[in-house]
Image: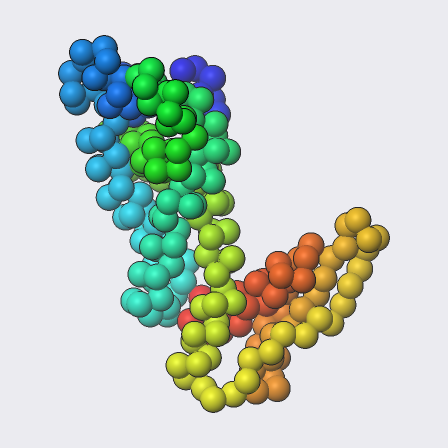
Length: 223
């Protein structure tokens, strides 16, 4: 537990909260423990706490962004894929207590379980240290993964925005390459109706296009 606390950057006053957050119902069932000794109730609370923290972050960092766009981004940032990335980076699967049956069936690597436990850990920190402690955990360990989920979808978001508001064509143009073959960087511009609306760099053409799309989106949303 001590090493795990170091990895998440938070030390519990009431460590039993962390133990519960890392306990699957199969362990409770096989060991005849109390039903509330598993993470399910904490996961319920953590879902709401994380949703609020994400909404607060998006609201304050994207001035002028519409309610619809804020809602879309929040759903992407707290989706299972993003939470699983964070869980794997923290090796949360290795910390969960399972019953033998769930352990043998691959529960330790099951995405739905990993995502649920991330939320239960958020709730445990919230109950132990308050909202700011939960926010600190999210900033250190979650948002760097959830932010990338939003960036990965910027091209789609930009395409939808342009189609809804303008008949002009949207195109991407590679404007530069640098570095050796094993470590290239690409520069890309995104044009809308012949006007440069965003520029981006990346280690691949795809990454550079996403970065350019993100910059162009910010001009639509005021972010």
